Length: 540
Ligand code: G6P
Ligand code: ZN
Picture 1 (cartoon, rainbow, N blue to C red):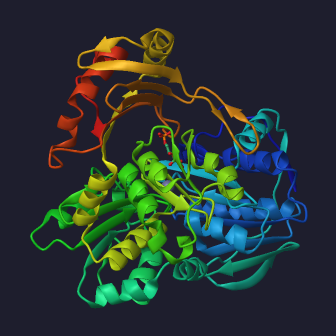
Picture 2 (picture 1 turned 90 degrees about the horizontal axis):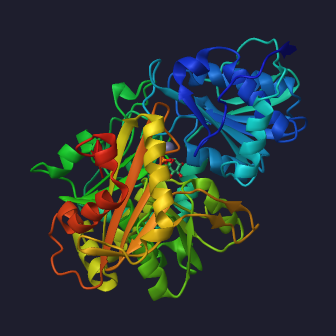
């Protein structure tokens, strides 16, 4: 049936789909309007097939039912849905590709907390399995501003716990095991025999699923298929509120894992993933691998992984990600692309075969096997390297820094800022950029400064206003941008890095190694002075 509606303000997809407070999404027709706008803006659902699933956060179960009924009413031919409405983001991307679906609806607010007081989100992925490009998200937003009706089938909820084929109105629905196809894909990409042998030889790992979607995936892959031992997966049971936690795999939020990895009986390798399974954090015994370094290590060791044995051709990183991988790309003689923040910008490069490995400082790493970043894939990539090199994470990192130099890197986040104030800081810096080159701030001199704009080398599309970059002498760089994923106030992210070709003291604390860059950033951008904050809220 067709229901009359009115446009709702603010339904503008951000870095990764539309994210809002759960309470907003719960108020009908908030979800209905947005889903209908997606359907309309992407050319209608008639005769098409889709993948639907989410990370199991509060409201996912109800939202899946609404989307299924709307797809049925809009004439969709077939929907593949994970049992219980569950699918990790990379598994959803894989299923879209595997079944040649026309698109997918992923219900998640990624690493943001869930629950009635937390966040919810809807993301639309296109037929290549990747997030909708900006051209489509802009159309979706336009459509939300003029929508006057939506279609929904007046039918009872489907029992999504029962796997198998069923139907909803004239639409066929396949309820599938959310884990099996994904685990099979991983098994054909990596050397499972070598990893299994490594575990059999006594190497121990811990994986923190943070009560989010990767629990069942990690159990099947690490415990059942790789014999990593029972209890390897911590916080394995997905919970609608993630157990009250913040499912973001970083040193601040993955506290259980950090404690375990620094304890007296620490395993050799530790890892974690986020709410919807696309992020990852990598740890060794007593060592944290920054996401930017992780990308560089994967690039340098890709030849050890069966799926990448043929070479990489190219790699890509988002602009604020450190340039550690650039040094590897140069040494390997392969392309290295710098894209705006957001996984969607890697899609064209991957589709065109220009790159096979991508990564972001925001704990995202992925390859050309799907069109999303992929947390468990990154963990398996590391395990494959550990098994092939028979070295510890610390040994691998030290060797990497000796070979390629070390890019010291840190991100300082100022959270919950007043939006106008944050814009004022950004605008002020933007106006300074043209005059910065040649100026000296403490020990650092500016080489060049600009606002990042990206021209996609495949389709020529231009994305401007992607953050302020300041390159300094001594291989240093300062980047400042506003987060595109928050749901309240503004978050200012300050990214700091400095490269040393022959690092003298690898044990120096990162903040100390970056002290001159941090001081120059404050001199130039005056974040603390203008905001009145004495320090960042989160340092990673
Ligand atoms: C999501 C996207 C990533 C992106 C990140 C940045 O996780 O999937 O591709 O790097 O958001 O978030 P920010 O809050 O910095 O905009
Ligand atoms: Zn995520």
